[in-house]
Image (cartoon, rainbow, N blue to C red; front, side):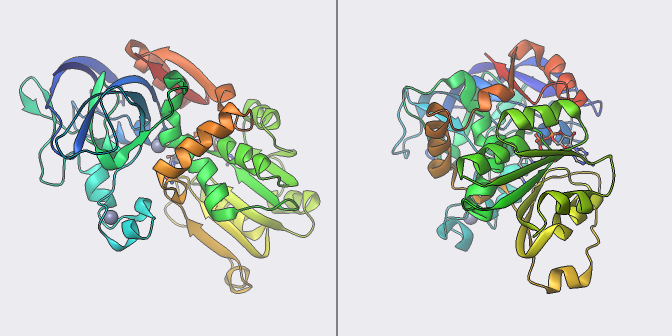
Length: 360
Ligand SMILES: NC(=O)c1ccc[n+]([C@@H]2O[C@H](COP(=O)([O-])OP(=O)(O)OC[C@H]3O[C@@H](n4cnc5c(N)ncnc54)[C@H](O)[C@@H]3O)[C@@H](O)[C@H]2O)c1
Ligand SMILES: [Zn+2]
Ligand SMILES: [Zn+2]
């Protein structure tokens, strides 16, 4: 199939629209025509070091145009969202934990199928594709059926893209890991797309206290609009002390989406003795220092990939929650035409938009 992709140009992280060829789907693959694709911080990070002509994009949603001979459960014409892929046969996959698949990095970041081939060619040459199971900064994508999530016919595909990563990550971390109850207190550090999805999920769970922490007043305002009961600007004062003022007994759960050591450290220290801190962000810090006794006294620090979710289970649930008005992620989205990907990426980098969504 002849398609158009937004390919990585150079280490500046910009994209150029190019004609490309996409192979027909293999036995276990599906061809999808994209309707929307969100831009995630992870795309912009990878864009700075992948080779020229690599194709990123991992929050795609669209319509199935063809299925491979061995595919069951998905048909031509189905509406789908795409998420990361996994092997399906390792211990983690068999334990319903596909985001911890033993082959996760090889399948999602190598730029190819497991056999080393890429479905994507530019100017006749194979290029880096299959990013997080999809490479959907493109009019069409070939994805392994394990990353395909079938959606209801009523779903608006123009909004469904980001459910495959950012929204899944934030909400899944709350529903699958922190599991706040009605009297719980949670704090979300970093109020971007991931953090705000977490705030919404905490509100939907009935958590009593939901603190959002950021360095941007507009992000804190957005957090108040989606369920945060308290907001803190982490630039002012001692963060742990100020969290203690809001929640004297300590937090039941915290989520870091900043990837900054000093923030992670505060997110752990502000827990009560049996609280859980979920580390989700990928940021500038390599290592975190946490006081020995803080951990010894029963606290848990855990890293979380894709909200520890099975996308085929949680994505439809989140879309239903959205339809019921309890997961109002449309407030976070700004739409751009696919052609305007560089403008959308620049606005995302500046923090001017929370979730840029490209439409085709
Ligand atoms: N673990 C996963 O599976 C997974 C999945 C998706 C995204 N991510 C990562 O999650 C992170 C968040 O993604 P996003 O799309 O929400 O990004 P984002 O950039 O929109 O959000 C990060 C927020 O952190 C805030 N921030 C920066 N420094 C801060 C500080 N010192 N204190 C408090 N807040 C601060 C920023 O102002 C911003 O609002 C990224 O690092 C992304 O790569 C991880
Ligand atoms: Zn992502
Ligand atoms: Zn696996």
